[in-house]
Image 1 (cartoon, rainbow, N blue to C red):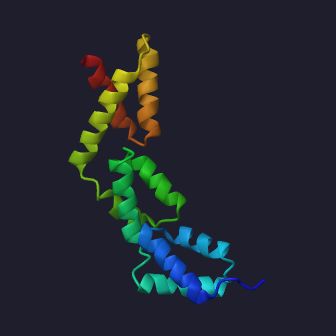
Image 2 (cartoon, helix red, strand yellow; image 1 turned 180 degrees about the vertical axis):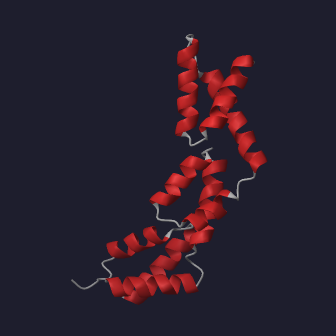
Image 3 (cartoon, rainbow, N blue to C red; image 1 turned 60 degrees about the vertical axis):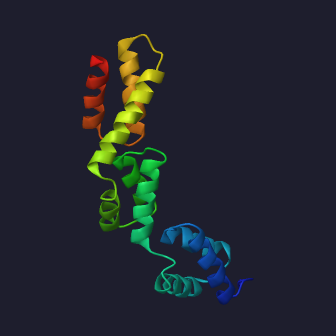
Length: 156
């Protein structure tokens, strides 16, 4: 089946798609498939997007890591897993994680811990601890940091 959109039109659509927000290669390829492009056309368009600097996996990974940490308060484990899900290389994942300074990371964890600990109304100490730990682990924080925070919160 031939595409309804010409490769030139598809390239323009994808340039706008990538300019609007950072995209990973997978998002671009699936968008092109949805436009009924052939594999050869897709390869050609992806190369043109990379050459035009509309598509840059490293830039995407760094922007993704910063955004998810600062806006959604995700930890490094969750960010890593989400980037792996998008087929981002481990080199780019490591570069992306360097975007979050250790100070900022611990400060965010502290604020999140404080808010979470105070919002749990559980009277049973063990259940409160479990809810607290589960929440932070789901957010993607390292278990060693989470358990340190539990100790800290119980002392206060």
